[in-house]
Figure 1 (cartoon, one colour):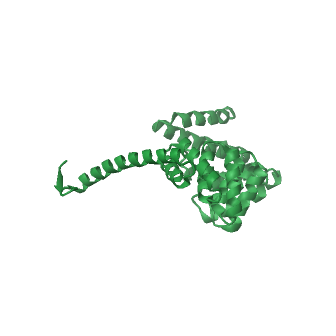
Figure 2 (cartoon, one colour):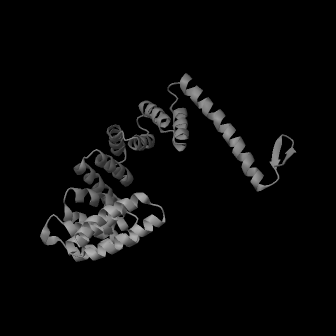
Figure 3 (cartoon, helix red, strand yellow):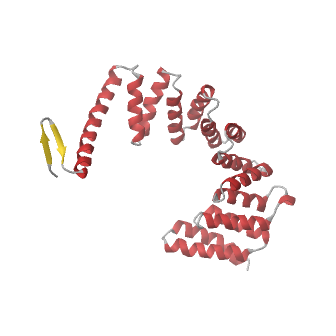
Length: 277
């Protein structure tokens, strides 16, 4: 690597040299900046702007504890900084500190009640705490703001499925399939409901098998939960042969690519099918 000096500047000879030089000086500058920020917040406890810079630096580099520590102080100093509060809540949820995360999300919602993404994050946190009714309420609120959010619709359908509100869950899943025909999750969820609907009169095993096979195809038969849904649908339809064929194909593919964990799960699923022959 060769540099050309020009006055007080160091000029690279090529684009590759320029990238190396920029990285060196950037790393050096960042270390200096961070040391300065750390010294400043120790000396000036109420400097929320520097704390925010330091927290952002930590968060981008995966230093979650440091980011949480600084953003906690920021929201104490400036409670109205909703964006900072949301950043803090996300990291707390990542750390599985759901109770504290939820408190921050709820405060943020009071300030931004029309933020669909914020309703979703609050709903996911409620779900993590087992508050299914509250989670469903937040997901519905998000969809009321923007009914094109199919990821939220899937979240709501999942919660409703757990609550055995199968009719409403199925309606949401079919809407997702209409919007996103390649959604393996939506096909899988719909298949499971049609195979095991809480109201036996509303079960449709044949349709469940079709949806489950589509889910397997869309997920390349690499998802154990999707394969398990196919087994349930086929058992309900009295079609163990289809389940066994797909599982054997998935097993061979899993072993070929060295996915022993999935291979073990598939082998477990095949056991009862072979015993029933």
